Length: 385
Image 1 (cartoon, helix red, strand yellow):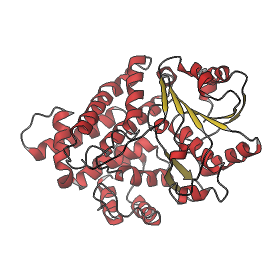
Image 2 (image 1 turned 90 degrees about the horizontal axis):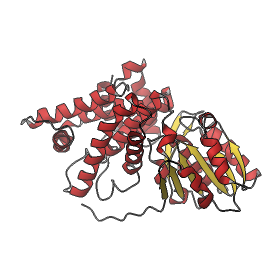
Image 3 (image 1 turned 180 degrees about the vertical axis):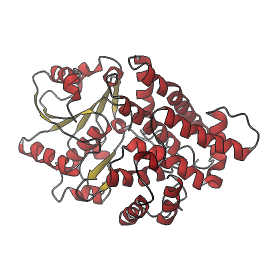
Image 4 (image 1 turned 60 degrees about the horizontal axis):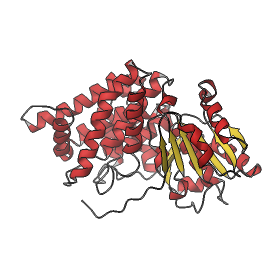
């Protein structure tokens, strides 16, 4: 393992009924902007719980955050926050709402062009309004990290930024809020959580036994509970385990001292920006293809993954590794998330489009070894057809 530091200051309030704890978490004199998406929180009672907990605090709302939050929409929220002199942002929703709120928090304090925040990957951020979260979808882990992913719809750019200034002050995780989610969102969330773990695990051996065992435990939990969330959607224990797995998958703890891949994410986000595929769908497409293309480099960890997580009993190392890839693909398909571009009506015409965007965004040295070039990405995309 490399030398490392780990710090995370987000307070987590986990469990059914915890939305009421907003009363103790938001400053009593705060003027709050509630940020949310399409309005499902007004149908399932979450919005009423939130406003009840805010009590006599001043609050206003901004709705309409997209599943891949648009820069253009976020800028309108920034204008509202400035005009109304808001001093606390409350994200109520899934990862997209939280990501949008992080950007709004940074942009509201930024004096220049808000796109500078994205263009510098967060380097331009020198402050932000405080952010709190009420999570309603287990997937991205954004509720406990400093990362935000934003899409500029006008130019088909989906990019991320990192800043400790936008790390949530607190996040409320009530598994009951996820029970009414559509099947597609649940399935995408399971895939997203699982791939977050795999991006930090299926790389190369570093003898990081604690991190490996932690990753394997999360993977086993997600594989066990994911299908149950589809067949038994009101099971709060299943929802709780998936919610906590998603949070722990990307709060920085799992990544501590080990290499990360993230090529699936960076290639996949170009597919989302260009063709509107769900984030989870792009990950299910890209990860098996990347593993196949980088088979020899990843074989040792694929074997470990196959033996410890999938309990493959074969003796041939190549066979174990290939079965691990196929079992992963089969799990994504079992969750209802297709793993081929063709399943979404896409063909080889997308390849030059994605490659051009990777070059434009300077994502030219991807993977844990930094050796996946745009031309490699083209070959990987061919495997994903």
